[in-house]
Length: 497
Image (cartoon, rainbow, N blue to C red; front, side, top):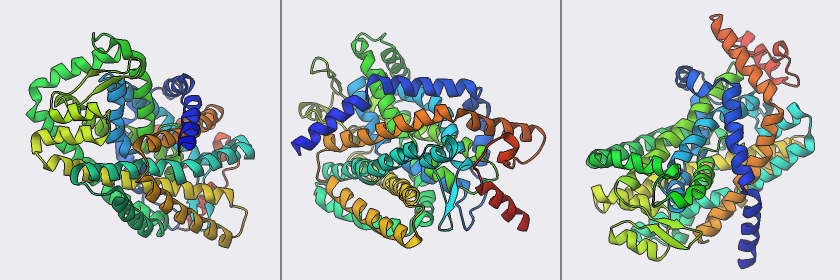
């Protein structure tokens, strides 16, 4: 294990260098400018489109695709990840999470629109994602295969471990439940769902994700109401810390940026290349429709759910801040519980659990543990679907029997990986997850820069049709996009209807 952890740490240092952080920020800013800040201009159609469209034999509805993508976005990163960002970057890290979410909404549009443009039909279901649009749009099979294998490794083995590990730790913290026992339960329920394929995953996601997100945000409002007199003070602390103006946290502004961006990307996944898999499965008449829906999902993830976590722990003083450079704490929460967490240098869902407990008592620990369990579990489901989509890509030229066999192996391997990760250390799980996210982000963002022209063309075509009073319908040849044969089939089906 020591050797494995050393290798993971080494890879993390390379993949998550300042270069990737700068690339994510610059990419989000560039696409925001090129789309004329669609995340602001088109906010109304974003909300409207979430509830339009129906599923079909080949695809799922826009809302199901949104919830499936949100299942991947809303997870451990919103609870434990936000706490980690504040622990290493100070309160100001929250601002950088907001910034990367705002800019990332444009990147989310680009990748989701491309996934729709070059989706395909395999075994009677829509499949798509970066590997598909890299091959069809860029004409590069080897680069597409690199992404596909990286995603299969990340989503099938590395990323699920972070979620399962956090669930197990949360229940161990609140009730002393052995991590292995939690792992057995998680693995069993996961098996029941993923063996039902994308439709079962989508149906579970559209029920659980909205319900739990609303419940969690409502709890944040309760804490905000109880501590309303501290709201102004917390806002000043957040923004002064973000830009080095606070005396206590001014020396770690670099950490605020780095950890805010890193945890922001990990949480909202904009540009990472994971959400496009679900976006491609949606039954829509125009790629821009799902692109806009996915852009708004970034807001839901970070501006709502991550912010809820941040404000809960900051307003209740249930946070610690550790300076990695000096090895000393810049801030330790006043309660005995936070003092104990500082002594063991523990960071994670415990911060949020303590914050909620200040208002609800012992119920707080259970509330956060349950929320985290649902958030993280639906994220594991989303990861499975992303891995399955890449299995379909890698074996797309084989017969359906071969794809079913490999898919079965993937399902069993993922269940074993989830079970194992619950007894691994939290640090190992997080670091392994970061490697997966970083690999996918590097490969996908480069592809987005290369394929920006067709992605921007979908937005221009969509807005032109709306301006003409039409319900936008996609014709790839009309705007000069090639190799998008699936849209000819879709047009034929719509004529028959």
